[in-house]
Amino acid sequence: MTEDNSFARLLKKASSKGDGRLCAYVRISQFRGLDESAGDIGIVRQARDICQLAVDDGVRIGTWHIDNDVSAASGRPRPGYESAFAMLASGRSTGLFAWDLVRLYRRGSELERLVELVESAPEELVVRTVKTGSNGIDLADPLGRMMARMMVWAAEMETFQQSSRQQASQRHRAQKGLWHGGTLPFGYRRRPGAPGYLDVVEEEAELVRWGAAAIVEGTPLSRVVAHFEASGVRPHRAEGWTRQVVRGLYMNDAVAGLRTHTPRRIRSRQPARGASTEVVEAVWDAIIPIEELERVRAVLHDPARGGGKGSRPPAKWWLGRALKCSVCGSKMKGKKRQHRSGKEMPPCYLCEKKGCVTTPVDLTEAWAREVALEAYRGTTALSALSKSDVEELSLIDSQRNEALDLLDKGSSVASVAEVLERLSARETAIRSRARALPGPSVGQDVEDWWDSLTVPEKAARFYDLGLDIVVSPVLVRGTRRADQDDPGFRLRARDTGE
Image 1 (cartoon, one colour):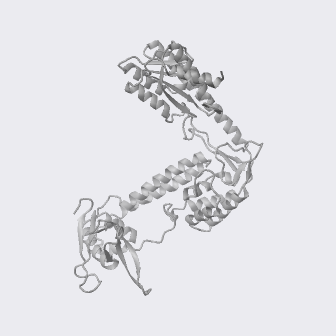
Image 2 (image 1 turned 90 degrees about the vertical axis):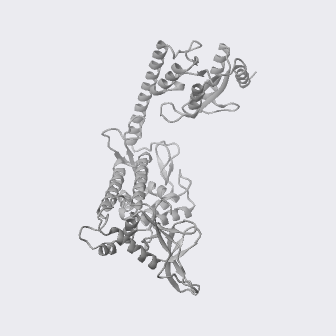
């Protein structure tokens, strides 16, 4: 009988006795290799020993829960463990078999969670492990809990020591200018037979150089992305080229032939307290010089480029957000019009969803201007942030999180700190602008104040009024021209219905 057949027979035997209300949990931190018939070698070894323990105890394993290539020390979710714990908590299972306690947990908080469950369970919960034998460790007994806690403390100490050794090894490699491993920076490939050394991939390097020159010259990032996408060269990790992927490429010091290292806290992505980024010359060739890389970053970080949405033409019409179609309730947007003869016609606001109604821009904005002037006369206080300000602040928060993620991609703390500083400056400017432009100052003529506002400022100030304009233009009989005397506008409070 072969080894595979013996395991199959053992598994069948362990699943054929008793009431089947016991569950088994197997976990391995790193994938080891495949057994041709059964799967991961490490998982199979644990399962074989657990089956033998169940047979010796004369009990039946009803369900198996597996976490393959999942660490218990990282604190990340373990689906297999959570499903086993849920069965114990719901009473569907009366016990748990595992190869060792450290297969179940390496963190004291997880042990205490299981202890609390054992103590509160209406019936006895059995925990058995191969390493401790059939007698197991009784988590309902004070002595058993003490032994379990000591084992977890030892496992935690082992984790910390292992992390410290790995960090020391990474720092040593960084000081020698060697690549740390993981996803390769775009433009490079590993050098065969030389761990830590990289070679330039010329096809990718040409894209890096072209993109750097284009960005410095002021080419919109959207066009750079389009050029990268059209080249047919794919990024190393992402599915395709996006603005974020291109930005990340130039936030990585590796393309300038530099190796950076920032000591991290154990079990955390945050830099260690008091740590500074170490920058050394790498063992691989630079694709672009550091001076050019800094110029690229200066352009990408320039607040004048906007909120990362590409170059857009300046807004021409300020009322779209407050206009609502009387037919379908959709928002309306400004649009240029052209006659069939090719002659340009006055712009209009158009129902965004179905084109139900249209209204001339000049007539509509003139009517809304009178509404705004009447509302702002005698007041100097509208302190709430406009919706556009709130949206931009939300975008800044997203970009702040993206900047922190760049630390994991090899960017230095200094470069990320520079990004965060620029984002903070933008946030301060937005909040200051909202406070500085709530309404006309005391003694200022309302009409002069309104006419001095830019298009975005007019849009924000009108939106602050909390009013919608419902549009159902009345046409002059026999023509397609709107009635100047009765344009068909109605005011209503926003979000309160009609």
